[in-house]
Structures are given as structure tokens and as C-alpha cells.
Amino acid sequence: MDLGLRDKVAIVTGGTRGIGKASAAALLREGARVVICGRTPGTLREAEAELSPLGEVSGLELDVTDADAPARLVSETTGRFGRVDILFSNVGGNRRKPFLETTDEDWAELHELNLGSHIRLARAVAAPMKEQGQGVILFNASIFGREAGGPELTIYNTTKAGMISLAKIMALDLAPFGIRVNSIAPGSILFPGGSWHKRREADPDGIARFVERNLPLGRFGHLDEVADFVAFMVSERASLLTGSCVNVDGGQSRSLI
Ligand SMILES: NC(=O)c1ccc[n+]([C@@H]2O[C@H](COP(=O)([O-])OP(=O)(O)OC[C@H]3O[C@@H](n4cnc5c(N)ncnc54)[C@H](OP(=O)(O)O)[C@@H]3O)[C@@H](O)[C@H]2O)c1
Image (tube, rainbow, N blue to C red):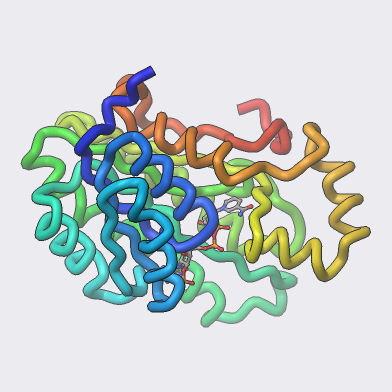
């Protein structure tokens, strides 16, 4: 199936490792031109070097929570590639803590990382997309925005649920301009250096039990299994898909909806 992504221009935030880098690679393989960003110059350059054999990629050192990040990302992208067709708003983080120990700073920082920065960036890309008469915005949420993730996840669960709600309502606002907005809800995805990898290193038996109890396929998800789905969701083959949140979780979530 031709996804129709050739020469499309995509922004992938947090494209230096994990789901972001794998998704940037999937888009490049389909012929898209991609701007990635991250805060760490070394890993940004490494990711650029790794991805550039696949196609035209540009790395921008930037913190998405900075006030000028949306304007910088859009001007870098339109300056280099002339337009912006796709935003995969992927950056996010977790801060596991018992609710009573969470501070105002914890809430403010994670609200900013998981929600505020996505709102500002989506608004910034939607302006040129509206002028073009088309565009696609995809947020990387989590199954723990769709259903309860468990104790110590109040901040993560709340902000990811907000992101799914944001995508749903943005989709209604932006549909008249030809802009589709969706979110994905990955389950537990394992990759070297990622959060599950670190947790497994720290507690191999505990994580083996977690896999047995929670992951019906008996294994973690792989990066390509999410990245290929991201490429489909932002492609023209998914033209009827807007206002949706789709699980990519190997059956991990329990919710019926
Ligand atoms: N892995 C999973 O099991 C899983 C499951 C469900 C949902 N998710 C979601 O998927 C997204 C990606 O997670 P991941 O596990 O693949 O990767 P990750 O280890 O969280 O890496 C995130 C990427 O974002 C960059 N980044 C982090 N903070 C940033 C900031 N403030 N500004 C700019 N870039 C920033 C990182 O580079 P720098 O550190 O250099 O900035 C890195 O490239 C997150 O939203 C996460 O909640 C992950």
C-alpha cells in the first residue's frame, strides 16, 4: 500500500530515541522529509547521522517547553522544506509518585511537558496547515490516558487523558480546514535505554511478573510496531480518521472503548 507520504514534510518532536526516532525513520522510509528535535546536542547529532541515509532529515536542538519552541520549530521546518504537513507531537514524560508526595512543581512541570507544550506547538503548526488547506496532527498519549494506570500515576494519567481530550476537540475545530487530529495510545514499549529497559535492569523478576500478568502477547511492544502505525495514521490512507485515539498495545489495556 502506498501511504502517499512522498515529499510530505513532518515534524517529529523528541525524535532522538524511542518511539519518536523510530517514527521519524518510518516516515523517511516512506519518502517524507522530517524535522526532529531534542534537548541533547550529542544524541540529536547521532540520530541525524543514523536517520540521514533514509532521507532528508534536519535536527533542531530545542526544549519543547520553551516559550519560543513552537515558533522555532515551524520556522526551521518551513525555512528548510517550505511547508509543514504533519506534526507527530511525541515528547512526554512520567513522574511516578504517591499522590500525597506530588508537589506543585511536579504538576506544573509535567503539565507543561505532556500538555502545555503540545497545545502551543499544535496551534503553531495549525496556522500554516490551515493556509495549505490540509494537515495532520498526531499526539502520542498512552493507554494510561484512556484508563486507570494504577497508583503513583496521577500526574501521567491526568495529563495523558487531557491530551486525548485535546485531540478529540481540536479535531472538531480543525476539520473545516482539512486538518485531521488524532492520538495514539501505546502500551508498554521496550527499547534499549528506554524507561521499561531501565526498570527491567533494576528489577528483572518484578518486570517478568509484570509481563506475565499484564501483557497478553507475553512480551513488550517493539518500536517498529508503533512507528509503522504512526506512519499509517498520518498518511492519506487514514483520511477518514480524525478525533480518534487508537491503542497500540498488544491487548494490554482493559477498557472496552
Ligand atoms: N515507551 C513506552 O512504553 C511508552 C508507552 C506509552 C506512551 N509513551 C509515550 O511515548 C512518548 C515517547 O516516549 P519514549 O519512551 O519513546 O521515549 P523517551 O525515552 O521518553 O524519549 C523522548 C524523546 O523526547 C526528547 N525529549 C524529552 N524531553 C524533551 C523536551 N522537553 N524537549 C524536547 N525533546 C525532549 C528526548 O531527547 P532529550 O532527552 O535529548 O531531550 C527523546 O528524543 C512519550 O510521550 C511517552 O509518554 C511511551
